[in-house]
Amino acid sequence: MDGYTFRLERPDDYAAVEAVTREAFWNVYKPGCDEHYILHTMRGDPAVIEELNYVCEAPNGEICGHIFYTRTKVVSEDQIVYPVISFGPISVHPACQRLGIGSNLIRISLDKAKEMQFSGVLITGNPQYYHRFGFRQAADYGIVADDGSSFSELMAVELMEHTFASVHGRIWFCQQFSQIDPDALSRFDEQFPPKARMKLQGQLS
Ligand SMILES: CC(C)(COP(=O)(O)OP(=O)(O)OC[C@H]1O[C@@H](n2cnc3c(N)ncnc32)[C@H](O)[C@@H]1OP(=O)(O)O)[C@@H](O)C(=O)NCCC(=O)NCCS
Image (tube, rainbow, N blue to C red; front, side, top):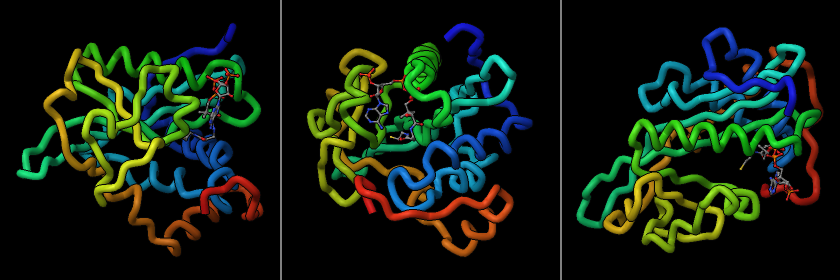
């Protein structure tokens, strides 16, 4: 990790961050990806927590990693709203993966989130990777997806002790993550170097 530095993202990093995100996610979970476009559409949105969005700068000064946080909420059956936070996308350029950059981005930002007194974090991702940071299946805390389903990829970590003891309900992630206009995504993607969308084994869709 010598020579790699971690700092908060600045507006003049946005283009580089979107390019790294596209490189990291391309063809991983589906043919192509939309995570770089989601970042783009969320710039300036009040749900974004700029104080937690860190980048990693490689020794040559180029951005090679990024983590993105948003405010979200858990809503109980009797409509009580519990504010929580979420991160994702998290991206490390394929040329720099498995050096510890992703782990550092997560640890640094979780420490800062704790310092800022956020209560807990909910994410979706691969449990094998996130359990090492203290994440547990959200259903263990009585937190389920917006459609009421529970699955191992929906995970939570408490930033304050027992924070989720009294928080039960459905998690509502920002709508921008699920409502993507495919034509707008295609137009946005034209500004990046062309890449082939491929159907590969292991993709989710
Ligand atoms: C996931 C990602 C951010 C991890 O960053 P990284 O800097 O490569 O990770 P680190 O070097 O900190 O950690 C490497 C460890 O994570 C594991 N790992 C990395 N990506 C993983 C994944 N998607 N699922 C499960 N484990 C993963 C590696 O096997 C390695 O495990 P080991 O230490 O037991 O060998 C990076 O691989 C990436 O950008 N992937 C593509 C985009 C993506 O999938 N983002 C996360 C969406 S949930």
